[in-house]
Length: 238
Image (cartoon, rainbow, N blue to C red; front, side, top):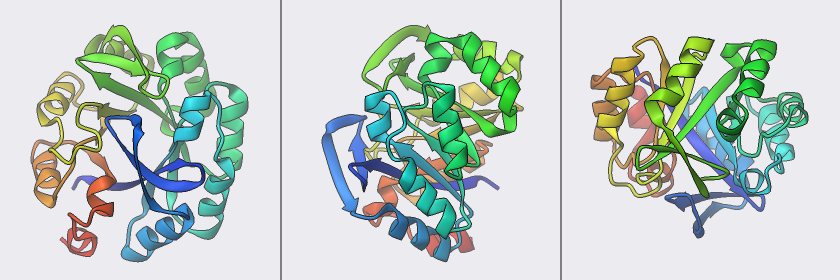
């Protein structure tokens, strides 16, 4: 069964969603991310994906106190990303209650450092963020595209011991136009043992069903929830 992971993205302490990572296309859904997290827990979710968009833009964690509140006041397993650029950020995230961290840009700019972190904290606590635009890895809050293509990027890290990958197709993110199923199938075909978390474009229950039918292990989704396009209780019951 596919793992269902709701998302909370944070800007200025508020629960928001962007479209294609564009900070100018921001929509605020709730002033208090903790309220949203508690609702997810009440419905029956066990896991939460939290993104510090202020941190991604600032290149260091900003909203760790919100993370601390959510992990202190819910039993949700939280993976946290956005702005993790130093060991100080890692320590701050874990001390604030994160069970896992998602690291993307450093894996592109300083691969040796990423592997060092993975060896220190363990591959089960590290999620490799692979954000893709036009087949190329994007970094720094999706504001800069690298010259590194996705599959070779993944290859070096799978060989180094990475077990968890969060792959976001940026052109799909926040668009409610359906996920990049073909892309995820390609990844799973190349690395069938990878715990791949699909992200971007989910608009309805049928999108999740399709990902599950293709053997994708997990999916992160947010805007479809906030726009009322998915009945969460029905989804979890099924």
